[in-house]
Image (cartoon, rainbow, N blue to C red; front, side):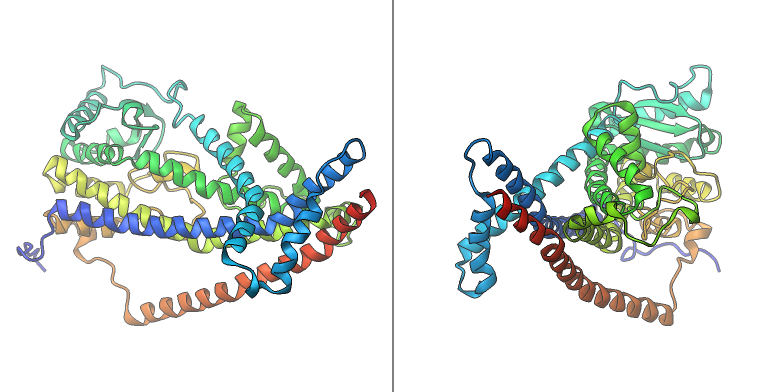
Length: 463
């Protein structure tokens, strides 16, 4: 079947494509922001009994030396009306209670977010003082050509030309930095010998488009938010595991001590929050609860369940939504590249060439979204942050690119597959809707039994 040119009603203007993908990306991002805020609030409320209980007991101990406020008695007076008759509590009082109860947990998340953000900013991808790769070789024609092409595209986008470094890696490239003024483009050495001049221009335009659209800053914020829940989940699920507890202590120290080694350790944890980083021998496991497990039992309800809840929702719901939003930004960068070059064929043929090449570049899973195409190593996410190459090519064809082999027949799922996927999504949504309240109820009951009762007994003894 011969290629048929697009008709006027079928072809999409790249300005409209950029605007459409930007709207979609921001709508999904806004929904994810609201969902993350609700999740953070719920986790903070689950942590409130433990955090306030510890603070109250500290004040009780200090009261033995000098008079201190009775925080636990005050908290009990505020909680009693809500437990006895919540409908009779004025809305203003209820909102005040929620704000005060969640404040310590939210503060804890801010501290963790600061540690994650600091680790990302101090990484080689964002810290311009660290040497990564090497500058382009003046004696290499392809390296000078790529650097010059990036400068041309930067001039067209009205931004400063980024720093260019060549690194050992596959046929891929990535843009990093805090903003356009501090941007660095890392290009894999294999990429330079694979593409021709037009294809190189398309890849350069995509990278410049990502820099101009602040993809780097948005990507860093996204990695920071996902990292908060990933680290909190890792800390909580490892709490009652004797073999993993040492790793949790190491992670806590790494968040508090700003060294290069601690920064590298924190970044290494920004992957699957439920992954087991240790592989102990089977003989080391003991099903019996020892003194250590009983001593940590008060943390089971507020810490373990809140962390598990955060990881569960983040992994199954919010991370895929963020990935879909980032896919729209990839489409947007492709459309902006067409706007800069006025030549969609260069980028489309480049993507086609990269689809058959080794694209491994960045070893860190949390930074893979900065690349032009998906690195071949797994990222640990349910939904890829990169659209399928076939769909990116099809989108470029709608903007005037020649029909490439992969884009000639975009993958269309059969009706039965769509029905099956839709049914699975409905079942998953139903399971999540049932499991979330059950997790909250289980956390509340365990907190009352193993956390609040010991705290109340100690409070009565100390006061």
